Image (tube, rainbow, N blue to C red; front, side, top):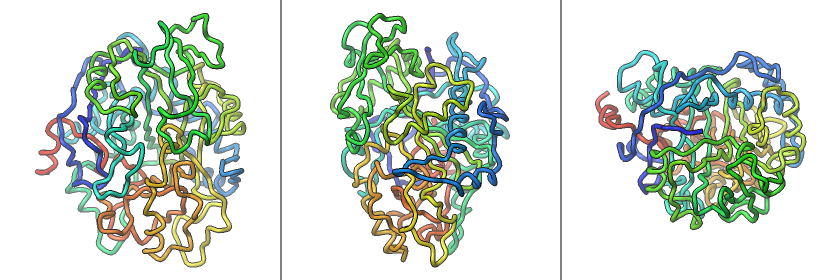
Length: 494
């Protein structure tokens, strides 16, 4: 599926966790705008029968009945809901780019679309946009204060990721409230108090990740290899070091396809790389030594490795992450057969979208700990709920979370710290995203804005005092998003 997209290419610079708000050098990226389409909103009913948004009382009831087996959620209502969201997001719409239809999530806004609308003084998000914004190649996270070192976290071992995607409701709220303006966000901070923003309950945010099938990965004409996730044995490695390969044929009718080690492109969500994407890919940092000299070209296939999916249906959001697997009926950790069986509750998954596994956690622990801490709450008697994407958090070593125990002790919460949860394999989406804080004072040693594994992070944790929580979205913290042309100067004067 060809895409002519608006792409922002990060030219060899590290993404900083604690920079001045939106101070990333702007206009270092090629901007291509060729196809026009209308962003499509989530349906009011998911194909598993759940309404969207589902009432938080219902979701909290599921959480109350959570049971994690070996750290993995087993609640069938949550699992079905996750697949209902995925089926909606991957539905093929009537919107078209370069003659081919877009899936629902591909029609959504990027943070850069919101920034441009803010800069243009729009009251509403444009109903027609002219970029898919699919691919943004950039370095993995690296902190200015040295908090995050280690493999997989440097510009030399950059991550290939997709832009953050906002559904129309999220984008409208970010525009209406001017969440990308420094003056607005700073003004929301109240000394001595924990401040937060609140997005609407129908908000959804995504982070899709991709692999480009370049000539360097070609085995034979029309056949490419990439490293598949084989389970915990691949953990804490960059994904170019995962132990096993699968092979992808770009012709879905290729006779070499056996659906064991060789698969057709039609079991991947994918599109065909445009010339603009190839240009930006070729001047970016790459993911590990295997890809450092990759040369992409227009026409290369780009496959979706997976995507984080978060919905604001409850105050701590719902958290699920999807990743491609060669064995969708029996996926390995961090998914399970129980989770895979949830696909049977939805009716609209197509051949490609049904070839992904899910990992989810609607609470950090099971039984869930309260949203706010009060004396007497304990964690030693609660089980962990791991929810992670193998191609993202699965690669994170303990260095990524190196200071978390120190911050718990510093803030008088040392008894809550779970000593076994210290790396990407023992992490959760909710635990990490709970730390999303506008201009977190990690440099001052408090702990706000730092990465946390699967720990209990109460919303009133002492390190949030005087800070502004960004409602679990790192993409609103001012630390990760690249700026469209002119926005940095605009932000200084508004």
